[in-house]
Length: 123
Image 1 (tube, rainbow, N blue to C red):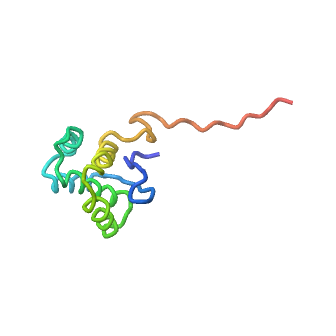
Image 2: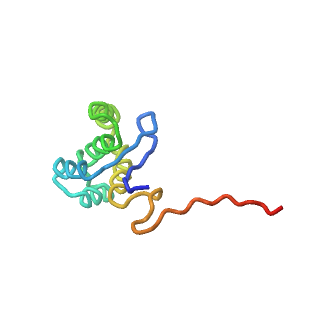
Image 3: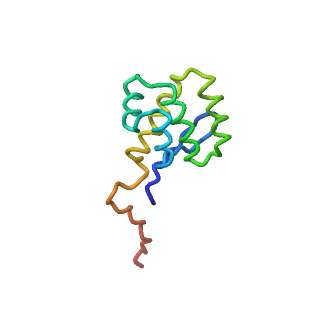
């Protein structure tokens, strides 16, 4: 398994995949005028800005495979039209997965667990 830093959870009525690859992280930096660690700190500390939440969700959806137009529509409906505080923890999870990875990924430098070999019973 390669490290792709994706995370999936139920959001907006469906199981959705979110991922912030390098291109999305760079765009997030531009949109929020802050690096990923600063955005994460703001989300954790309660000093987040609107685009910290909104753009993390939108770009995470796009990185996870949602077409850009659909991602924008979902964000407009389930972020813009709802209390922003509802999505802060989701944005934080997405950003943390991009920065630190997830528990489904092998740790850097560690081999994936070998599959069990079938055993045969002695007759």
